[in-house]
Length: 261
Ligand code: SAM
Image (cartoon, rainbow, N blue to C red):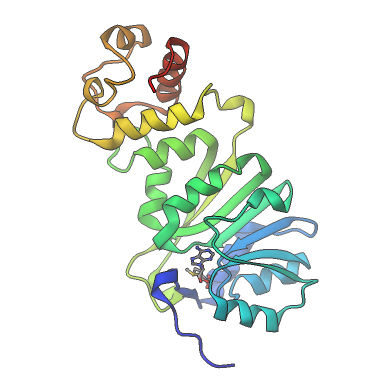
């Protein structure tokens, strides 16, 4: 088969280090009977050992050349190929509990994580490789430079852990940056706590929209000095000082008062 030239626009860096591939597959711990979907199988570096252990799995791939290769390589009994954009894919259609894995295309990682978060109720766990810098933001704690909208909105919904780093040399072509493996496990729905999640999202977006401004400024459309006092929060702080629970409390307080349009 002819060589596949990596396409930048699809964020293609293919894993080529067999030890790293084994380490990632071991971290996923695939078991017969699991329903697993891999986002962006590419040249099947992870797909091969996963199908080997599972017997059957799903993949979502956008690149037609790679899809043609996958069709030649696997029978439909072993691999169900969903052709198209993972950002638009209905992960809920694969049934629950679903396990999601992938060495994600880095150029769409943030919107893809937000899209995946909407299927949290059908998912049992997700194991991804992402740019280390993005993983550090996902797992960041309040008060750190990396802590922001991505941290709050994902930690609201998932328990997350960074498992290990992967150096650029493990890929062809080598990316410029180090990658990390992250595991995400959805929290039980009764632990989430926000009465209006869309409102929580708007408040968090506002709080981190202008990082240097204080909450008094960034949240002025939602709460006033009296509300800060009721909530026991200092309006002179910046958004990065508040915990996920603080944001949920603010959102629920605003819900009770009647949210602004
Ligand atoms: N899993 C392979 C590996 O580890 O070697 C390839 C990983 S490569 C970083 C990302 C893969 O995601 C490529 O196969 C690329 O074509 C695919 N991809 C990029 N954008 C996508 C999208 N929007 N939807 C589905 N797949 C996409």
